[in-house]
Length: 218
Length: 218
Image (cartoon, rainbow over all chains, first blue to last red; front, side):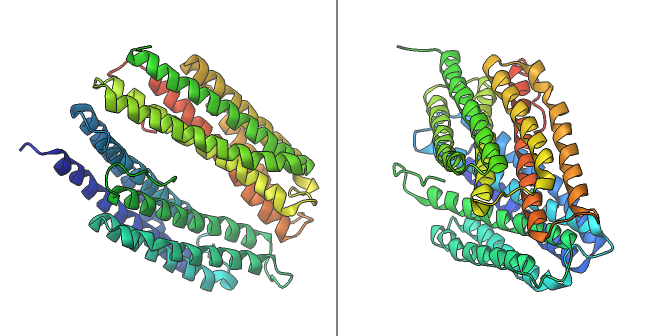
């Protein structure tokens, strides 16, 4: 069944939504593994991380195939290439979920998160999930307004990240070096996850822009 | 002056070499800033990081322009797109150098690296520089054999990274939580830098492969 450019591009868009949903679910499971020391969840995350990479390659192959077959206009080409960037950011989010799960597995059956930090990491994982949920919705509906609203959640993540360091570096920190090192790395994984979610949102905003306008410097 | 596909692509390749050289120099300065608490070097790194991002956009724009104007063959297109991936990895390496410099600035005029870790970080920065040097040479000469040789240096980096954690998490660690948290994050920056150098090398190997063969799953 022959399809126009927009039909083919929207097929790629469908794969991006699938990817974003998988990324969200994977980080959820990673957070569960982290906060409840659930070994099965952690193992599942590793498998799903590999699936997300396969989806990334699928998007790349489809885009290259599309670009190779059609002579795209100067407006169509950047839009098409943006799909690859979105996929790359989503893949990186999946990788960060895998890093969280690996941290959980490394300390299993002990918790990788010190009891003093559980509340903070629960909050970070909630913000991460909210960001991923908005990414899914923004991609599914090509909703630039929704995409622009991610900055607030990103600020919330940055605040939690700063509070995490304040707790660990305070003279009252009751735990040792290992708990703080784990906390620092885990904090960075969640913070980077949020950054990549914001990148995806930025691309959605670019995609919604009428052809000819400059893209944002992301 | 009209140019063929290969002429245009080699122009892009020239920009990638420029980028790789800038990335190498930037990480060198970041390491100097880190190990000698040199404020001026750290400031320079922030400026050069911005320049590297500009070069990344230049590569993207040129590739999109090239792909948009020419009807590339199924063999030419992936090669062309690989340039964007290389540029993205190099940009990320530049960002990691900026993270190192920011860590140095955050503790300035105190050193961000505890005296106990100076030797390890000096070794990590040497391996990072060796990797970057090979990336420059492999890109400049399209040398797949040289590119394949990066794995050894990456192993060296992983070993140093593991040793770093062993030192910080040993019961003999004489310093507090802050020094270990700084060390953990800095260690991760150097390790990721090496990972991205290996990615670039993998792309060079792909580029050197005769058209039609499958690319490696990077």
